[in-house]
Image 1 (cartoon, rainbow, N blue to C red):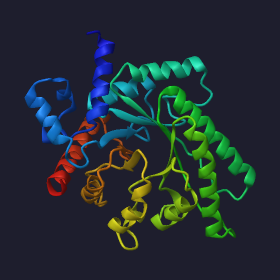
Image 2: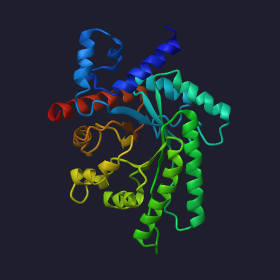
Image 3: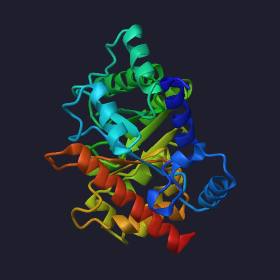
Image 4: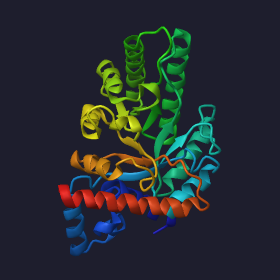
Amino acid sequence: MRFSSRRSFLKQSILSCSSIPLLTQCSCLRAADPSPTASEENAECCEKKGCKMRFGLVTYLWGQDWDLPTVITNCEKSGILGVELRVDHKHDVKPSMTPEQRKEVRKRFKDTPVIFVGMGTNEQYDNPDPAKVAQAIENTKAFVKLSYDCGGSGVKVKPNQFHPNVPKEKTLEQIGKSLNIVGKYAADFKQQIRLEVHGTCAPLPYIKQIMDVADHPNVTVCWNSNDEDLQGEGLEKNFAMVSKRFGDTAHVRELNIGKYPYQKLMDLFVGIDYKGWILLEARTAPKDPVAAMIEQKQVFDKMVADAQSRIS
């Protein structure tokens, strides 16, 4: 089997089995083994809730200075086989790319087991100036087309903040209406709009208000693991408030650093049988980022396995 063909086969195995925790002995790499034992193990694994959840990377700080080949290589080395590319970083995937350059990005991912999850943008729709909102909508459309051309599946956007002398309800409604516009456009390209829980709009009751207006099914919520998640009636209530609108991505920080209750969060994702990407948006500056990525993947796998042992 040629190397590129083997990689394509491996990618398909990963897509079908997703990020099955290594510690549960359901490794996706064994999907290629046709023996009855391997088949039985995969069948057992895929009956567990959360079995199709996958662990990926946001090139926020870890990866901001890597060109695209390095991003892909480091993801392969770490076993983190999905990536959301942040804009304005060294990998330089941007709307100004030519059709040929976009084809090259698509080919780079196609020839590896690493999946291009989509673009992580800073486009937001809160500004009181209608011209700036219109520009943000047009910018988002350009990123939708870019993600489509490069083989991604969606675009992350932000709500994002409130403004003096503007009623909050007006801002939330404006954001929701803008999301409907970009959501409808993106649907034609089979791209998902992923609203990151971000900014002064981050409290989940605000996000729910936005999503009540943004009722296009292609507009989704990207959980962002903020301190605001613990406010009000707590994590479980806030999670349930928006979980029916989750898209294919959620963001976490380092899973073993800080006080955020990540094990409880994994319990909740497993409990709803989430099938999307849990993307690491790391904030630290490790000396060896690949080793740190490997560690985070191991922590994720164990947390999912622990959640499955209690819930499945």
